[in-house]
Length: 364
View 1 (cartoon, rainbow, N blue to C red):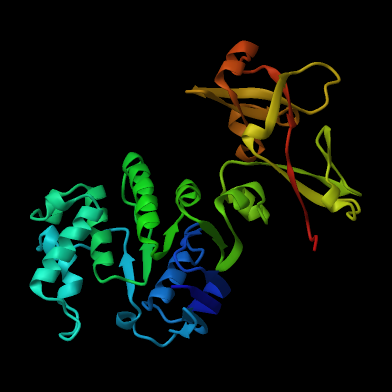
View 2 (spheres, one colour):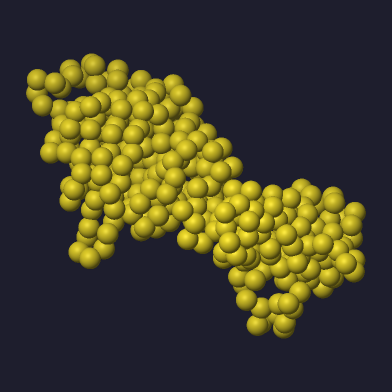
């Protein structure tokens, strides 16, 4: 089932949760709504489900306006962060619940329910837990049972609100892979809300980045990572360094450095920001006259194959308690390279960006 979201707005008192949001979701697609807390992603999910009403705009399922269709009629499955399983029911009864409360004319017989529930428990690889109660399950198992229960009514759309948010990192990673495999098998149009960038980039077909009630960018995980559309997207997707400078006729001048920026050829001495990811910084020992940004190595964290370097620009070399956190430059180099170069904390180094993305203030 395809979903069209058209000019949806929603306010809670004076707070604008959604501001004129439009989005097209293809049938069978797995979409991630990604953004910080309060950006509107859960509100949008609840409006799609019919659990909230939009102040303006419309939601269409396969071309049909569902704006005024009751949640029970939308054929939507919903999975919450905290499982929402019935504690007094066994796993089997939890999954069977949606089938048993269907109107009499649509309700399957007991044999059909039994067969369907065991089929779903097999799908989520937990058929051996049918007689257990939720309190006897791990968090990851409970979430898979919640998903089986949502799938029991054969929804046309599956909505997941921070489905793995309450789980520890290792279980989250396992369930992310499992959800992706399950989706590839079922092809149910699915939308999941997350504030975890890694989760969205690993699982989704397309990522919808939201900020302050608006959609900032929509694209495949690779597109949004490689070509962020705004400073917000660049800063939200992973670690990034921001350098201040001036853009003039296709060139950006930063502290001790000039970067070519052809897309800003029309800029005339405009305020500019250059964004550089830590792994895109080249780090060398300082030599007089070296081109680049002169820094002091404040701290080196070597874990596994990567060395993470915290660097303070030369003009910010003050006592540590006064060093502004925002002035710290983060670089990542292979751990072996760090050992070979023999960098020491307190040493003066020079960094140059191999790749930078420049945004010019007030540029059209």
